[in-house]
Length: 211
Image (cartoon, rainbow, N blue to C red; front, side, top):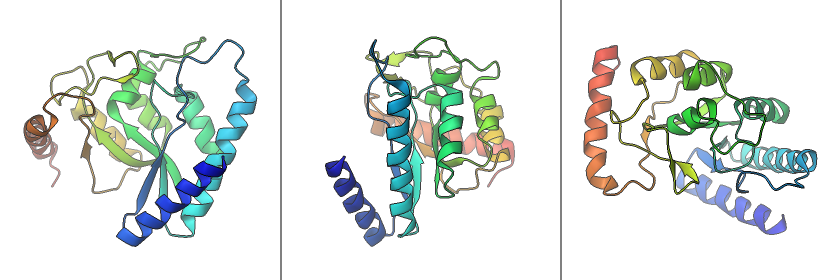
């Protein structure tokens, strides 16, 4: 706890010095949870730590974004919504990674039963997070996990996500940043693939009438 706080404080100072307005956090611990996992105690610990992070970052006018994903605890859609609500800080929101959102809401990947699926998938997830999306990773999903840990970050246009409806839904629910970040985590030859993904987004934005 002490080392985490010290490192986070240094990271906040670094962001402030460099003019970086957002800092990312996650829950670190892998899923599925152990048999004798103390859910409520862990929930309180994460809530207290993230609340502390938000308060420290607020002093530097930074936004803290939590990147939820299948491979880390509290990966159910309604857990994400609940934790954001209980932390209740204006500068604490989620980092909405489209393939993580899909794998958490449609595949219920690496969830401990009972599973928490959303009929409307990532689009419904974005709807439920109205006003709480602070940053966006745009990437496709092929319904699989990478090494049975995190979501497979498939190049745009090669997976199952319908970005023509998903991205407008995210914007409609209050996402107003100019950043639509392409995330090719663990994808081979990511640098070369980025060009085709950028062209995919350019064409999609033109089709949607976005500048």
